[in-house]
Amino acid sequence: MISSLWIAKTGLDAQQTNMDVIANNLANVSTNGF
Image (cartoon, rainbow, N blue to C red; front, side):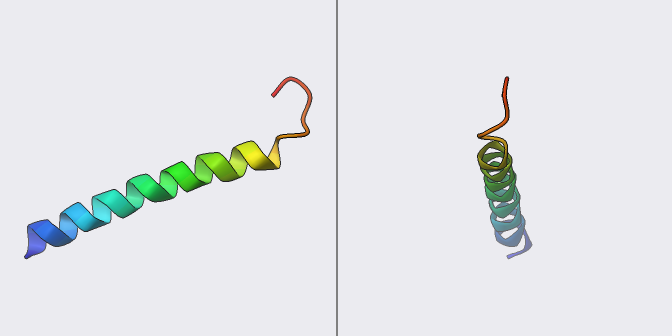
């Protein structure tokens, strides 16, 4: 059971990182040279 929770946590961490990158890109969409 612990390994399945670890797999779920790792997947959520990866998804959160992906969302952070997208949010940063959207926040800087109007910045010159970005």
